Length: 373
Image: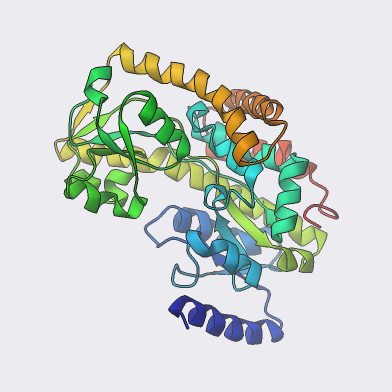
């Protein structure tokens, strides 16, 4: 028997005994190690807020990646070993095609808080999205976003000519399409293998978060940070709740759970989307990395790619995801991005104010007698 199956079986047995004892503790799985923002602040904040927002009715225990990773999170949730898990739609596009479609719109991302809120409102108010979660046996409880991706390279990139032929790690299909559009070669490498492949010369750099400089020690290999905005990774389901666990809650407990989740989601985006990248940039400057703002040709090429790719995504949605009304859904998402960009700017990017706005505009409008049931 595989080690993962053994671990899940033992864990399920132990926790089943605990549940029979009447514990109100939810099993929480960030799918990442403690150094990752999915663990802290995302899941740590949820665990802290649950008893506060539910008058002690709900608590949580955080499980490590030895129990569930983002790669096997769907199975862990469906088996009940995990009751709240970090589920990434781009890992399971066949199960969550409508959410995955929004991930293909990465290059719209310019403001992490706006993208996270737009993604959250889109899924909550999307009938097809909620039907997909129902079929999966899970309940959606919010999204988050990375900072705006840039290029972290071993070679300088100042012009469109400089990027031709560069081998760049891609974190997903929209980034791969951009690389091909500008003449680079996208390489499909797991983010955890970026350091090794870059050190071996397999890749010349990566399209990713500036925070990767510290999270994956790329600061020891990269020589240049190319400040070319490449969109955000916002197709996240920070908290997918097991359907049985959700049904076992009272409507008031569900409402409290969402208040806790909302606070955690905003804390996560503030950390991953802003604070970590700022720290990483400071450390990169200390380490002697060169920061480059490329010339206008790369900005113009990237903008041209965005406009063309928005049209291409419609075909991708129809052919790969079997979504027949993709154009209307894309336009709706763009409108939500505009809406939340305005709200976030009006809030002065203050996380507490943004959390209040998301609570008011989205979660307070949910009927907890029927949502997810």
